[in-house]
Length: 268
Ligand SMILES: [Zn+2]
Image (tube, rainbow, N blue to C red):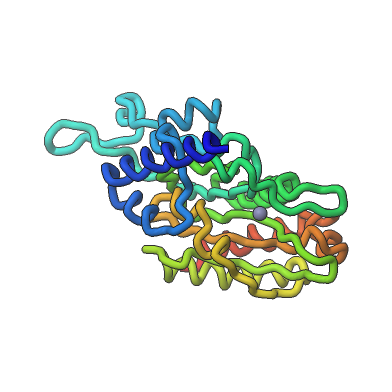
């Protein structure tokens, strides 16, 4: 099956070339040993937008003259200054494995865990949507992100939502953050808040079991270096006890995540 290995290698070569030509975000991405072998189109936000067809993560609208005229001020040079920054902070919530078929190999093959007749992407998406509802009610702008996070994605914070799988007696949740990041201090605070609030809301025990998959998660390399990001394994989908929360009471899981994010963005 030589042919199946040739294409990924070719794509990898293209990506390495593109990374060498790109800026600091790409430099950070190249640091990661699990940096995904993205196709060339995945490095171009415009092409991603086109392929995702109504992306859930639109880039900020361009500052058109009409926007400047209504929201900006005349500068001393007679030009228009940028409009005042939006008051609403944007939160990115990634539903792990959701719409994975859009992502390049091998991420399109990562189906995630399953249990109790549920697949991880569906469980993650439900929790993400409920958390989004809470955060929007609190005044934040929320974007639900699929597997393929647009390259250079920016937000006030990004949290990736996942569920674990393992032997039936294994349970617990934990949050994790990038092994290396320009936002390490903020991400440490974010992880601490997620662990505290998620335990409080769900009663699921905290059991840290970080792996290269959670420390070098491919998504960390896709967001802009200015954007703090963490990942949460919400519980084991293979545990009937954890499923009683993450499947049967996803509102509680969402409450813990939303509460942590709200504190992260308001308690500076
Ligand atoms: Zn997962």
